[in-house]
Amino acid sequence: MSARFMLLASLAAAMLPAPALAQDLQARVNAYKQRVEMLEAQDAIENLQATYGYYFDKGLWDQAAGLFTADGSFEYGMRGVYVGQAHIRRAMLLFGPQGLAAGHLNNHMQLQSVITVARDGLTAKARWQGMVMLAQPNANGVWGVGLYENDYVREKGVWKIAKLHFYLTALTDYDEGFAKNTIRADGPSALFPPDKPPSVAYRSLPGAYIPPFSFPHPVTGKDLSHPVEPADSVLGVRQ
Amino acid sequence: MTRHSLTAALLAAHALLAGMPALAQDAAARLDALDKRISRLEDLNQIERLQKVYGYFVDKGQWTQLSELFADDATLEIGGKGLFLGKKRVLEYMQTAFGPDGAKEGLLANHMQFQPIPDVSPDGKTGWIRSRAFVMSVGGWGLPLYEDAFVKQNGVWKFKRESGPFTMYTSWAGWGKNALNNTWPDKFDPPPDLPPSTIYLTYPAYYIIPFHYPNPVTGKAFVPDKAEVGAYAAPPGTKTQADWHGIGRLADGTQPIAEPPRE
Image 1: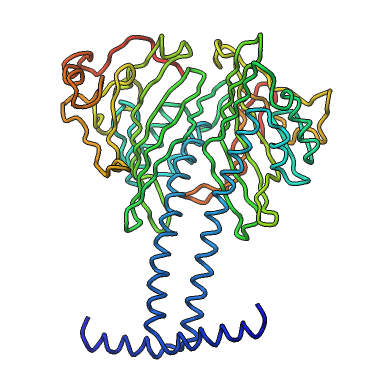
Image 2 (image 1 turned 90 degrees about the horizontal axis):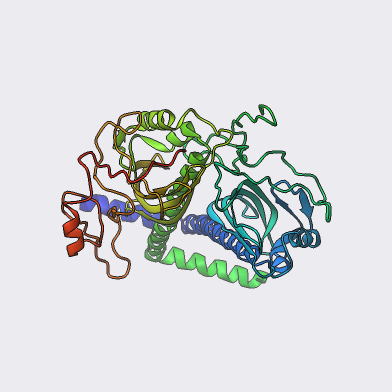
């Protein structure tokens, strides 16, 4: 850089109206604050969902239900939709008593999060991969897997689960495996019926339903909310 | 804040900035540094996200969407199959080897993605990840590892290189009874553009794909074994590993001890 140019540049900088410069700095600070808040929101949601998993594993239904908003909803497989913390807690009791019973394994791993926080930082959506390992006394172990597509909301600065939807997609006997054996997903309970029927009718394996993606394609930006569903020999071809 | 104190603060800020352009410049420099740090975190997130979305697309046979995660000149190498060059070949590989786009009744092939270690270059244009998948499928279990590279083009991160060597693949009988040693170039169609970058065997042997990043505590780089066979039976540098180079493998890279799992 020539000395003359440097002089001109510094003169130009000095002549910049100070309030404009301050405004520019303030605008940058605001923009960065928003970006940091998005990162913090993602982090909080990741921890929230992971915590749900840890509670659910051990039958801590009170604690798990407490992670939902007052009008939050819980939908597991084809069991239907339960609304509000009290109903969510009872829906979870269908998996066993508070604290689980002896000899039970109820692991629901929370993996592969793809979290999308809304621009206003008040709501978010996330997809998760949910590997499942189950056991109860006098029965063989069970392998399972499914997908979560959940909604979250920030209330008074605290992230909560507004909607949890676990699409249980496959269950099998521990020894037999998916090729030889598939266990049908439970439907709505007669003991404690859900508030609403299942929001989506699908079959777990051998069905191969694709839960809609809550995020667009990360490179092309194309909408993925209506994936092409496979033909199903029971349900027929979906549109 | 009261109106009085707000006015006072504004007046102070005004006087500060008007009187000291150097201070404002210093603030701008600090904001530049902050921008870089925030951008790095955003980039790391986006790289992790690409790897996870790749997994979701594999699960459901979304091959076209999967190929669109790749840059035009990206490469792909999975197991011992060899290298595929370019986005179009990535798509051809997936559709030929694993069938047309879409999920299929009776099929489960979940590639659950976790344990990511993303990194990004100081200029923010190149990224890497070491991560893994746990495969749960109708055919059995699998453990691919990934050392992938990414490129940022027009502000969008894309796969630049996918390297997915296998650690272990087994049928539902389990890895105590059955193990696929690896795949190889002509095991199934389509043939690759280039032979495998490394010849190695999977479990019960093992291969350590070099880490793209140094040991986080010592800062030392991982030095791969320089011998011509890439399979490991013991850590690099040990006698067991040295002996291993001459045994345990046929000329075509196979060591069939069981039928491979069907997917």
